[in-house]
Image (cartoon, rainbow, N blue to C red; front, side, top):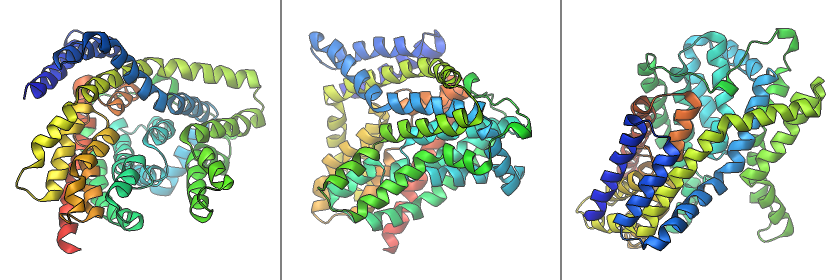
Length: 438
């Protein structure tokens, strides 16, 4: 119980420092992480190492994706490709259905792409749509982000759902089918429906990714623009399909695994974009590199904040508080699927990482599935839905949204956190309904 009090006080301290005293979030995270580590019983001499490890782990997994994604996004914007894609979307769907169009786009892109990759690729397109047609930013953005979030938490081949399928010996295809059935109502309610309530909340594009109108004659072609912007998605889909038909353990499988790594995919996509949207359109290599240098400055502060959130997460993991909470909830007399969701929700709120919450919950609940207490495919989805609940200050995605869209802390909680919670609750409802039908 003391651990829960420490976590609650730590989160309140983060809110006070960042929102009340206007301390930079990176510094706030470091101070609160050190204090929480001490209060949770981590030896004093081990605290600096835990903080460094947390920052290193999270930045190691996101740094290349975020930086290359920002570079690709800035080039897509400056070349006019984002403007061309935005015009094509509006022409196909109309302004009144733009939120639904972005929800569909986010879902299609979100299935093969890791969340961070999809986020940094779609954001410039969202900004271009909003800038060109003067639409409310969050009304257009939230549907796309909700769709990607649903895919991240519920659908293989994303890391957490895929690992859960293996842990529970579930069927990958059946889990994907069930996941899509659960995902559709979740993304509709958390995206276009909830998004309609956000028109009055102030938000503005990150300055480096705000689109400036370019004359029609200077824009790249529609096909070039779409294929270049979505090349990471195309590469991941292609490599996933190839991986299914080649022998496991072969040299070809190793090559495909290398090419399908998100960092490699983003670097390849950036190299292609350098040619298609830069050199092939008459820009010098030095000019393209200046664009890339500007993109690094755009996301530098965000990377610090994400690193700080990783330090806080590592402190909670190292203290063992996530396992302690899981054991506390494990014996509740409830539906196993609901228990799985609750266990994951508590770990997610405390730790911040959806992937960590899902995999930790899987270890705690393995005996329930092994004993035949729940359908393994539905257990994957119940845990996946729980892992999306209540994203807040200890989640890197929370800060990506806040920084990219220049939204205040309170408004980020009212928009992003509520959206993620809707996805989680509706996802649970879908799983419980499916459990009665299958």
